[in-house]
Structures are given as C-alpha cells and as structure tokens.
Image (cartoon, rainbow, N blue to C red):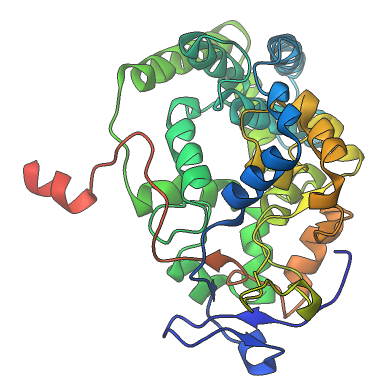
Length: 367
C-alpha cells in the first residue's frame, strides 16, 4: 500500500468511530461503518464533474475473442497432458504457470460478462459465460452472476455481500496459520461461502450451465483421459491458491491501510477505504480487475476502458490508497498481525439482493 495512517474503526456494539485508537486497531472485530457505501457517491460526483465519462459504458467486442482463445488454449493443454502422470513436476508445473493463469483469466471473464459487457444481449452474455466456464471444470457461471451483482449493490452489507468472511472464518482463520490456510484454499471458501450465507433460486440458465459443463467434462474424459479433466480442476484450484493472480481476491477489499485525519469529511466523519486498486502489469492477464475502485464506481464500463475512467477523473483516484503488488498483498496478509480476516468494512443495513434468495430454514420447512 502507498501510505501508513491512523486507524479508524467502529465496533459492533455501536461505539462511535475512533481515530488513532490502538486498542481498536487490534480488535478481533470487523470495521463497522454506518455510512453509505462510497462508490455510488463518488460515481455521482464524477459524472457531475465529467459527464462525458458515461460514454465509456457498454459492451466490449474483444471479450468474446479473448474467451475463445483462452478456452481453446486450456482444452489443447488438457489434451496434451492426457498421458502425463498426475504427480509429475511437468503436470503441476504446466498447471501452475499456464493453467492457473488461464483459468484465473476465465474467472475474470465470467466476472466481466456478469455485467453484460461481452454482448448487448443478456442471453448471449449468459451463453458465453457458460462457454468460458468449460475449462474451469465445475459449473458456476450462472450462480456467480446474482451473487456478484449483489456484492456490488450491497457492498459490505452483513448477510448479503458474500465476498465478506463469515464470523466463523474470522474466529478460526485469523492467525498466521489460519490465513495461510485461507490463502491456499481460498477458491473453496469463495465457492462454498455464498451457499452458507443465503441460497439463490435455481433457474433454467443454472440447469443449462450444469448440463453443458457435465457434457463437456464427460467428453473430455472419454476422448482424452481422466488426467485431462484433472488438469483443468488443478488449474482452477491453483488459480485460487498461492498464485500471483490470486492476490486480487484479497487486495480488492481487505483493509491494509486506513485514512489520515487530513481526509476527514466536512461533517467530521473519516471514511474507511473499502476498495483498493492495483495498476501493475498483472492486469494484462485479468481483464484489468486491479482497477477495482474504477470498476465499482462504473461497473458498466468494460475492462478495456477502465484506465480511461481514471484518466478522465484523476482527482478522484490519485489520492486513494492502492496496492503496488498482488504478491506482496498475499505475503503481508499472511504474515502481518495487523492484517487479517477481520480487516473488512461491514455495514448492517443498505443495499439490495439481486436475483432473489431462498432461506435455508424456510426451504427445509417447505421440503
């Protein structure tokens, strides 16, 4: 991060935020805030100052060709490794260097497509997301979209934003070993956590996602080998493990640095930064997901134009804390005792759920 600063926190018991409170800094609670999430406010301010920025919104035709190329690459590599021993250095080396990079790219292609930024047609966006899902090995693109859009509409809202660690994770994983375990297996946390928070209703697109994925997996196993399918699964696991590109999962919203008194707002509140950008070279492989403040401010702007958002409104972004390295973000998250699972901003109210949900208990009663 770019700077050290005072700690600003609000305890879950309703205490007023304190500035420079060392005890609060070491609290095993999340950062609780009672203000609106910052992106809507900043988006309106930017549009007022730079109305031309709205012209950046809309689909990016290049996305479908990148998806096609990466899916093809992964299928070819899987077939080439069909006879390679699973526990060989070659198998895991290719999976780490090429497979994990490719599948992280596809994770973020699905992220991009969830905002309808590949085609104008919502239906075509759902279909290409299912296609991008193929090398990941497990169907998830249809479920990802409503959870992710809720994350945007309900940033930090406890019980709605499934990007937030649960209280159980905070209790058991907020240590060096626990954080190392989380970083190694975080792909499973991101896959399973949403279902533990709330369940979305299944739709025809979910069914299609499952049918297409199972058919692809079966065909790959039949015409290539089980090892070819395992290569895709290992690639997905490594993409969300101790891999440089996986640093974006942690870097985007975990609070490494807080704000200085000079950033105090007119009403004497000091906002806690909730989103952090990264402007380094790894954005080339990840649809510019590092420009995360810009993405949350303007989710309708595609990856190829996010740098233009920052260029048009530098006065809104240049002073924000940011990451210089995703690798260092992982390293520090694990080893720094002041950074951990509870370093997330939470709010109890606000936002809205996208796509509807079914309560687990209600569904059990109905069953």
